[in-house]
Image 1: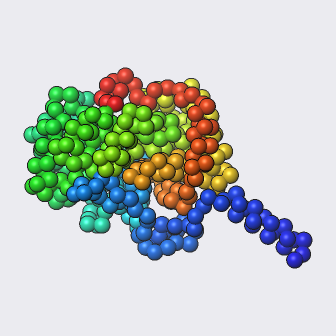
Image 2: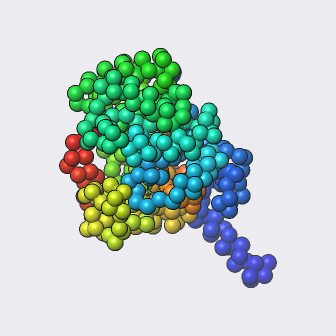
Image 3: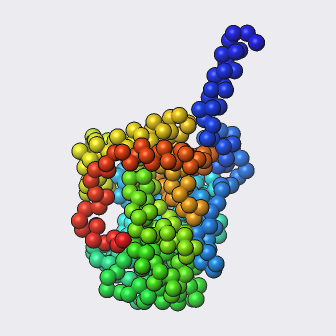
Length: 375
Ligand SMILES: NC(=O)c1ccc[n+]([C@@H]2O[C@H](COP(=O)([O-])OP(=O)(O)OC[C@H]3O[C@@H](n4cnc5c(N)ncnc54)[C@H](OP(=O)(O)O)[C@@H]3O)[C@@H](O)[C@H]2O)c1
């Protein structure tokens, strides 16, 4: 071996060591991301819920909200339809929307774009925010007659005969959860809904709801900058009762991806991040130290900070299925390639130790939005 070959071989060994946590690339295919591809439409899977409430899904889902709503500018509908088609081709089988996104527009768009894949994928949607004449009133309602009407309307917009998973989006303080669960049990018996879930509720509400009609999943905010569900008993009760957990905003609304800073301009007409204390310029400036930790951690492992954020969530429990949203094919591939990596217990401890030394600045919601979440 000459000197040049020797250094080339050493470089390869050093590279392999640095990227040691990377498993054989489970490339989502037919994917043109440049890593070779595998069998069409295959991704590892997980199961949300148990028994007759069980639902098999891809290990990562796709949050559809930002395709039309609350995440600033987005490409035209044709491009976004192509993006959803790529996600299906890659093997994603869980697509998340809600009546209030738009309102109504997101469901309409997702229903149209995913219609060709009916039977191959699951669309999940959410009721609970009151909508009058196409506008959100800011009030919550889960009255059984309203849930029933919203279910019929969602079915039409989504072009489905049955909703695979229907979540309550926000708790309704005027309607006991047992009444909501009873209504959903009726809709399941009638075949209009297959399964149900709750968002941002307490462990006690989960127990009461599950006792009437078994839950498939709880969807609440969870990521490295917001770990409430580890402390308020929600993750524990999911583990105990065999309920899945779907972390929303798993990249903290894009922040942990590293592309947002104190100078970022959010679209005033279509982005709720500008209303969030954690997304005010000074908070963004200070919280960037957390992104820097993820970037440093990822650099030695060949991972981006978004992949670190997603891999950390996936390591928390086998019943956790994050739903990152994106308007970009490159980010879709980047996010799915998180599945190439496994973090060891030592990696997780190192990452958490480093993140915990930095205080998170700013609340996740403003006072009004905070009133709508329990737990
Ligand atoms: N149940 C609830 O109350 C609730 C609340 C909020 C959201 N959700 C659900 O959760 C889904 C995701 O939430 P979210 O949109 O708030 O948060 P998120 O998935 O954490 O972040 C989405 C943002 O991250 C950016 N992004 C995605 N991948 C990236 C990457 N690899 N690198 C850098 N940036 C990246 C996207 O921008 P680009 O378009 O530029 O990629 C997008 O603006 C929603 O679509 C919705 O379905 C539910």
